[in-house]
Length: 393
Image (cartoon, rainbow, N blue to C red; front, side, top):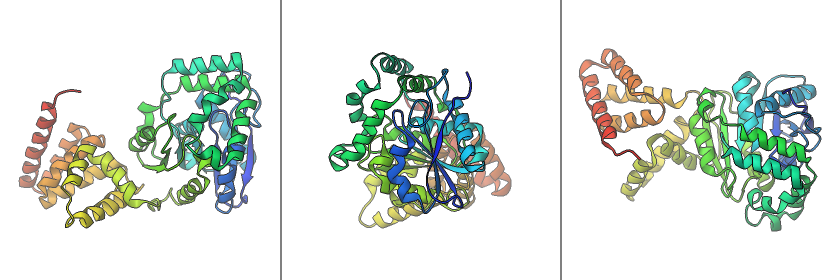
């Protein structure tokens, strides 16, 4: 196998602006999928799009290829246009998976990334091989009818028929081998075990109505990279940049600020805080807490959700493992034993092992005092025993 030839094209914005590289979904081109969002972003970024082999302006593939090799081709195409240098990345579906390979293999090139309507694994490889065979035997035009329900949220065909028609026409015109080769590359893709390697800020964006890569797939991404955030876009399915260009442009304008120690200033801080809170503490704990919330405590719970979880825990400067270690130490030092039990459980959810928690507690024996550490060991042991006593799923 060799690096496939990928073609890129400028989609707007001045060369003196930061570079945003955008990539398409299977069966589309960057130009058509991203045109509406790119118009809205032209004052923020220099936008460069790239196309999959046999899609848009990229030539037919000569050989089989992997998503990792596509990532190499993307870098080559971008460098031909920009001359090199770091960029912000936004990829939809398969282009989101290519973005993961960029983050694995050349993280120094990617300032931050929006992975949109995508996943770390796209399901049973046999299904992708079957779709590849279908594309080669009957052609991509025969896939259009089955694709509409996956691509578009209810009402989009009526709301913007011209955009929908342009995207579906593009699927019909896609080279059969280019489509099939991309399906086969997706069949061989599984990045679930590597997500913890990614330290680059990642914004995982889900379409609320997406059945191809549902919101839980994006929640998984955001929770397992080191600096992830999750946003769900209403009234969008699998092609969010075309379906909701205003919302996607709003998110990508905010992403321009995320690569420093500044928090990502996204709309819906309370909503995102609730996502982070559930990721860290677990649904069962949050559900119990919400059920116990009264009119008297509701404002306090909102304050905690928005500012503790939606602001501090969401800052990109530390990963969640580190924040758990800091939180455990602070709670032990102040004797907040009830909160300590909750955050020991949270630390386990954030990836700390029991041995690492023990090391944190030993450290506090020196700096917070032996009696405080003694109490912390007793609480941790109780938490571990409770977990061990629970029946296996």
